[in-house]
Image (cartoon, rainbow, N blue to C red):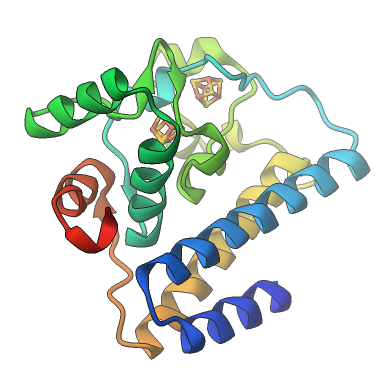
Amino acid sequence: MAEADNMFRNGLAAAAHPSDILKLSRTLLDICTEVSDGLNSICKVSPVACRSGCDTCCRSLIQVNPIFARLALDYARRTFTPERLEMLHQRLLTDVTFCPFLFDGACSIYDQRPMVCRGYYSFDVALCQSGTFCENDLGYQGDEGHAAHQYRIFLFVLEKRIEDIEREFGIDPGPVFLHEAVRALWDDPQEG
Ligand code: SF4
Ligand code: SF4
């Protein structure tokens, strides 16, 4: 946590261009992946039901720290086909009711998905499909020794610390709706 804090604070102090913020955000997500892998390797866990291609929790509009909207758009521009990019743009121009990055039942920016998406997990996809997500039922979050639960706490604390550091630097930490933030960034020449 301290490593992530220092990296983010020092990175913001040195940032001179939006691309520097992108690099910082990517590094934060790499740290999240590292912590998740580490916890999974040291904890004996009951299997989490989440799988690539399981999309019930993506069929809603999510709120994120603005830096992850910037990262999502950058990733889409670098990796999507022109057709998919155009489809994303069209979705953003209309009133989508699900996450616009959901394509063919899977997250199209999975490697760079925002922190909030990483904290979602379930032991029973049937409960998700019936609309019972983890925050609705405390018993659903798993026992406190579960790696997924520990990871969720890590993400929660890290996100709060990132927000505090952003405030120190005069940056609005949001949250903002992902689709609205990406739509606002779309025509910004600095994001191209
Ligand atoms: S939280 Fe539920 S819907 Fe989302 S990936 Fe996990 S099992 Fe699937
Ligand atoms: S960014 Fe990806 S994981 Fe997050 S809600 Fe959208 S499709 Fe789902």
